[in-house]
Amino acid sequence: MRSAQISRNTNETRINIEINLDGKGNSEINTGIGFFNHMLTSFSKHSGLDMVLEATGDIEVD
Image 1 (cartoon, rainbow, N blue to C red):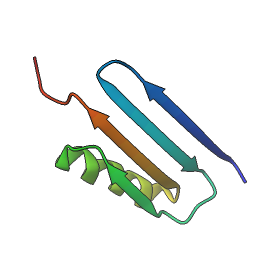
Image 2: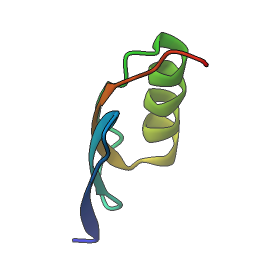
Image 3: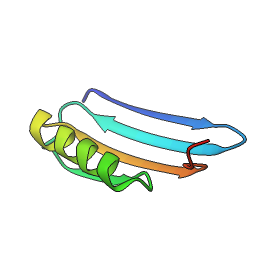
Image 4: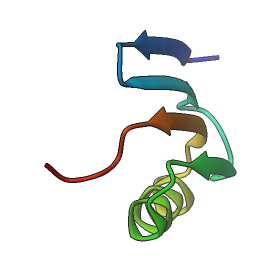
């Protein structure tokens, strides 16, 4: 199985992602930005990869 799990933490944000390149197009996306969630869900579905993404933190534009 070709997969990866990556985490990135800064003072403002926390991002965790798991990707399985040999998946079925399933996803659980939560970024706090509706359109970005939609785009990542569509990407996962149409590319056939599984993705679990949780992103929290400062999403306000300066």
